Amino acid sequence: MLSKRYPQTLPGRDLHLIFSLSYLSFLVLLPLGFLILSLQGVSLEEAGRILFSRRAIAAFRVSFSLSFYAAIIDLFLGVIIAWVLVKYEFLGKNFFDSIVDLPFAMPTAISGIALATLYSEEGWIGQVLTKAGIEVSYTPSGILIALIFVGLPFAVRAVQPAVEALDVDMEEAAASLGAKRPAILGRIVFPQLLPSMITGLTMSFARGLGEYGSVIFIAGNIPYVSEIVPLLIVVELDQFNFKAATVLAVAMLLLSFLLLVSLGLIGHQLRKRYG
Amino acid sequence: MKCKLLFLFFLLLPLKILCGQRDLEAIRRDLARKEGTPSTKSSLEILNVSYDPTREFYDDYNAIFKKWWKQKTNQNLRIIQSHGASAKQARAVMSGLDADVVSLALAFDIDAIQHSTGIVGDEWQKRLPNQSSPYFSTIVFLVRKGNPKNIHDWGDLVREGVQIVTPNPKTSGGGRWGYLAAWAWAMEATGQQPDLAKEYMKKLFANAPVLDTGARGSTTNFFLRKKGDVLISWENEAYLMIDKMGRDRVEIVYPSLSIRAEPPVAWLEQIVDKKGTQDAAEFYLKYLYSLTAQELIARHHFRPYDSQVALQYEKKFPKIPLISIEELGGWDSIQKLHFGEGGIFDEVYLSEKE
Image 1 (cartoon, rainbow over the protein chains, first blue to last red):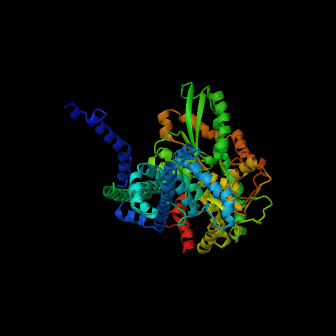
Image 2 (image 1 turned 90 degrees about the vertical axis):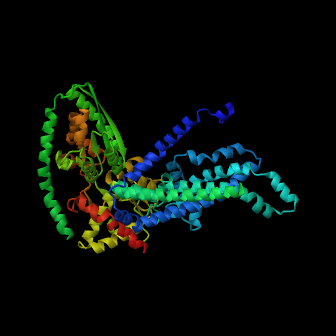
Image 3 (image 1 turned 45 degrees about the vertical axis):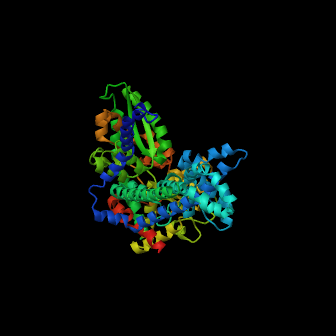
């Protein structure tokens, strides 16, 4: 009887449920709801004109494509880093494990300034790249670098637990049955990691879409070329075009939400299949 | 055309000074007569919400005003400063920051506060001399020492191989003044033909590899990352940079025509009423027109409104023709024509892409 009443370690289930849901709504849904409410008085036609202006379309393209590329690169790097951190023993492992989180903690403006300086024509890395004819700071590649930087911890931290949980017995069993390395990787390891990889991809993608601070320092911020949607929103605000800023923000919100939900669903399906 | 305008400018200059300086006398009589204050509190606090380049000036000004106020009213005054990009500061005030006074980069920003909230008061620009601008400044070029790219005027900026550094006119007050100065020159150089002037603007911005969101950001790019050959800058920022970075790295070039940038000040009627700071806020701004403050203004590299102080600093601030916002049609029409949706600034970039 008692065990049925208190199935959880934390007592007071209902209270907690109500508390956390209302807290979550208060912190997250209220501001977002307010944003959507402030759309009132914007006609559909007006919203369409704002969203489909060439400048907005260009900004959406820059934001979504670069965030996606950055997330893919983060995922690739993230899996390798997570693998190394989990599977190998080496000097300073704890140190390297903790610096993975630094981009989380660093004020993004500082990362942006540091990156812009490093990659500018006079900077340490930029000097070498300039000689090779590659320009990074103040171009879309600069944005990509900044987004890779801020998104990396998300990819690493999402994949790391899955690497830890990998079933070594299964790998050994496969090896003893004569499977070669590529087969083990492709048919045993990869399916186990895939759901977390999708999570990592989603999170660094989402981070990239919302990033503002570090990008504006390293992007040239040239309209149609290196202008991201968050900057366009700030540009509209600075001109007191609150309507346009709201429309852009809501569009960004909806698109990101759709993306997160669909990627989440894919992850869920994969987990059901392999998990 | 150029000659005619120049002639008109010098013809109107004394006229403007004569009309203007009479308000200055009136306000100084006001300041001299000041004794006591209706507020009986022993100490008072006011908040001045300002834009970026005035940081150093208001530090000094607040100190001298506090002393003056204490001497006149026996009241201790605390002045809190807030600095940031002009439009952002205006937005903070709109969404409820209780500023007693605002001192922003453009009248457009204070107008925006008034339009959206009505707290500034109608006709705020008529309450103080010179449309509530105690000083003005202009846009100049900063080039690397020795002027290696041989830059002397706006026309030189569109040459191939010249890189310019300027903030984004849509996000930065300084950027907007710089853009308008370039436009004014282009209109004059092409005999008032907008199509040709647009061509010039296209070439100009094609030479700008970075558009920073604020004036200080551009200055950093120019100095620390050695980006570009010319920085299009506020005159006072240019002097400040020379003070800080030394004369051996850059020099100032004055173009043949620039803009008269008049950053205005205003007290916010409804807020000072609510806080009971009307008297202090009003005199805080009026004192900006005193001889002491006008000299301080000039020392901080802003051009003083007082013609006598201006005369003293004549060598420092070369006389070049400065076109005013009114001559360009006023903020409302400028905003629509250049920076609004599908305005000339958008066009400049669009056709470059195609």
